[in-house]
Length: 311
Ligand SMILES: [Zn+2]
Image 1 (cartoon, rainbow, N blue to C red):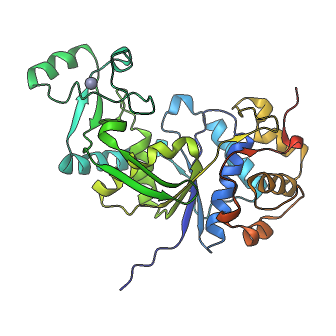
Image 2 (image 1 turned 60 degrees about the vertical axis):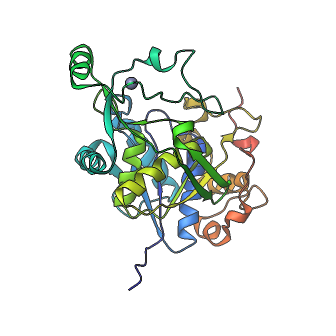
């Protein structure tokens, strides 16, 4: 029997600052993409780093989504409550891949002689991969290690729904990567894969800054026996003058909602992304009907001047 998977998308913000218009645009694209296929839209709060992610920011994000009608079809998942699931995944990975403690300091990792990938990212050298029991014991007395996973010298390729073909050789482009930080918090790469897998996510819509994370996540999905979702990495959103949006109050989603009604915000963002040709109010139902990835801008998305905070 065919295993039919219900189209399932998600919006997964990190509540470490104010939500800005670019975050809402990402939520809107994720919503429209999956709703145009008759699927489910989920919200997940990526508050792994609890001290940096106060509950009040999570509430603000959920309030903004509610005000726009971008409601989750299941109760929102909080990553801060999912440690047991990440620990289970770590145990599963330890049975099919080499996991090892890494004691390197930030300064050691970013030293001038540290290996770099072709695009200048620092690549982990594997310095701690072959420590023996005595070395590990000595280093453990001095500081807490993070946990890394060994990567194969193999290219991982996929076709992004917006950016096209993308590939990375994990050994050359990032090296063995962290799945648990030295403070015991599970790494983003692992948490995302576990949560998307458990929620049955079939498509991931997020900012292009995360494109280079996808091969690491696909590698973890394969080890954990999880299907890879379809990825869509949308261009970063800037204001009408080409400035990068920040998590400061001036660019905040709440400011937009104080000044404009929900359909004006939705229509303005949909226009910026290329879904409708002109700036005008539009409902979620109308945008769902009109949505097509073929129309979404691939280069850069600039907010309408009306949505730009003019100092
Ligand atoms: Zn190390």
